[in-house]
Length: 162
Image 1 (cartoon, helix red, strand yellow):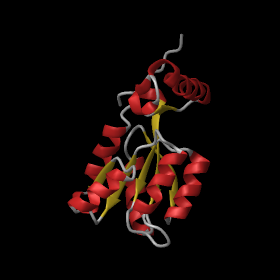
Image 2 (spheres, rainbow, N blue to C red):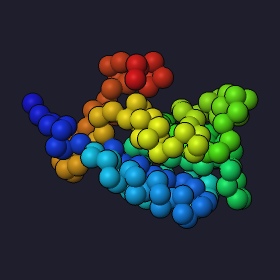
Image 3 (cartoon, helix red, strand yellow):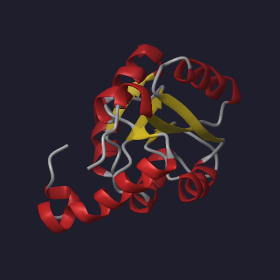
Image 4 (tube, rainbow, N blue to C red):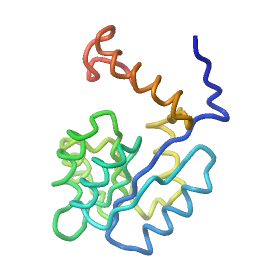
């Protein structure tokens, strides 16, 4: 049997995708100051976010909805397909109710306005990824294997409670 002390061993790996370098920096600085959060990468547009998700397999994606080349709403289905268990949080200036409904329909789990601030973003990440992933590679491998086996015992991920 394995024991994981999540107070010391767990971290939530976060990818930030925003076209504004200054905003990415502010988000990064706020998140790395939170114990248990790690910014594993950044992307300046949606195509780069797709590549970074493939490469890094983050636990959570913070995604701007309005970016050049392709917006977050257009990229979300591809991003969710690459990593179905990864919560996607839209952190955007656009959060009218119609936009929020559309965002959820394409796989975005939570919409937070930039006006609401970084505190709300941190709360949102905690609400969607409360335990994080163990830091050590041995424990991480065990957790990954357990996640892969879970559908055999509990059904597909869509049937499992969060």
